[in-house]
Amino acid sequence: MSRTKLILFCLPLAATLGTATAATVTFDTLPGINTDPFTTITENGITVTSTTGDWQQAFLVGNPVPSIFTQSPTASLTITTGGQFGFLSFDLGTGGTTNPEYLFQGFIGALEVLNGTASPGGIDFVTITNFFPPMLIDRLVITTTLTSTSANIDNINLDLVSSVPEPGTVTLGALGLAGLYFARRRRTA
Image (cartoon, rainbow, N blue to C red; front, side, top):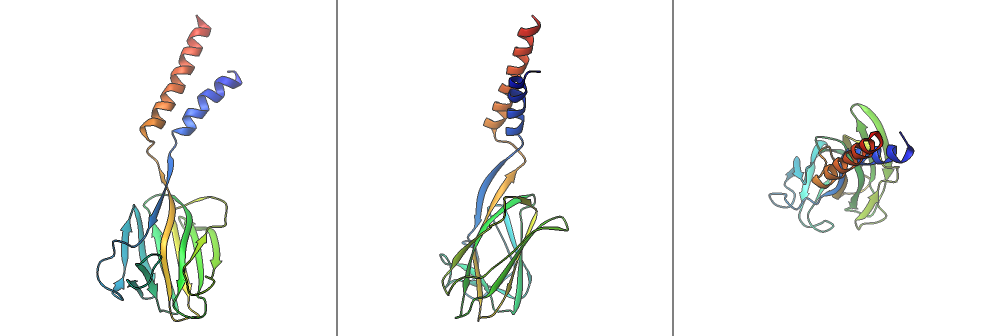
């Protein structure tokens, strides 16, 4: 098989493997009032769950309002999608004059493949971007350690990976395979 035909064959197949779509948890669908307990939310296919510490809903602070916050010395959130995803960023805020420390960890099954720390630079919200090369994970854990009165999290951004290709991608794959078929048929005729 010639190099051109190999490329024509592999390119459409690679395109049909899945697509990534950016999605954000903004906490806009939180029910209740300020300081109500936060346990879990599913927004845009992303589930955020309180796993340690006491998390609360914040309707007075956010980037924009609302967000979630904790006053626990150490508190964690677990983020999942039911599949694999890429971690892009999240917004960090503090309710005091000193900065809380944040640890984010990405996992594939039980294997930790992503580990980074961050601390916002003041009392306003700061977007912390994943500074690691893009990689797929199936669970993200964000842990806060307070050195202030509270820590807020808002706008968790992920790249969701779809294992079901879009119709246009399937069409492209089918056209590539049809092209290979006709090229081979013409050569044998």
